[in-house]
Image (cartoon, rainbow, N blue to C red):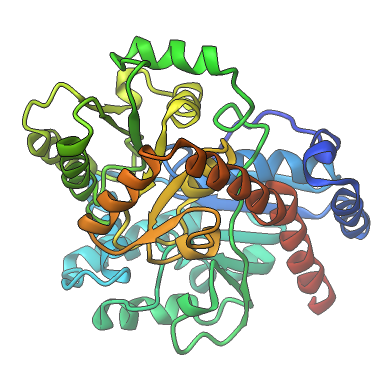
Length: 412
């Protein structure tokens, strides 16, 4: 059998003071007819990315509402995750499709995981391309199926989407962050559901300024000097090299500025280490550039501290499925600058709750404006936090899932 992921317990009632009683009651009302529903989430990895972070919240909340919910991860070795990383990049527009051997590897691992998948589920939610073939291979193992896509498929490599489409188009329901991400040819019911953050998770809970500063100091940050920070995976699409270039322009006018690039290395991203090394090389020994990851003991609390303490948060992506680090950062009440791509504009009202940029020069200019005007930063941070509260917190996301489960039940 596939490996179940151990998750803690959560109570929906704990979110009432943050999200409001009306939304919490709406969620409870939707859950009442779904008591005992057997729901399985299947993903590639239990840590290191936005999918796992979401599931560590959604699975226990579904259990709290009376659903019989489990989360299992597929089996895979380096050859498989190498192929699926190439698949991920190609689906976001990289020029090279997988080789026939790499596609064969992907299919063989899906066949193996399909055999190991237990049956009897009312709903099976399959996350992303890694296990996407499961519905086609073992449709009888669940009464209802959902494919949840967490990446941007708006401009995929043509050959790659042609290979993948036969495996995903027949899912009875599919979920994308945005309508723009839905590829041509999807046959089932398509839902546009932006993801959300957990405001009570260690990464997002309120942290006292003194505590945030103390944590930052442990990693060599001078807490008396301004700090720019990007939290993201070390991936070319996240453009940490461009962030370094923008920082260097800022440093010409504000010599005391520092930069922290904080990321998590995932088990299904073998190329991540190569790009991490490339990022270090691009920093060229600058002692004011701090490049950190989970192997430097950077966990959820440390990420929270960097985001809470930074004078400016950046997510300068050049492609982005959604970018949960955007809402995570803005939730800390800090001013934010993001790439004008993917799901980032959905989370940022340009000029009102943060800034959207399309180049290194724009990023540097907006950074200089915020660092030079602390009141501007405070206003952007306050407005941004309230926007996230209204649109991108976990109870709203849970409500959207329950609505889809209700549709699935009425159709079976």
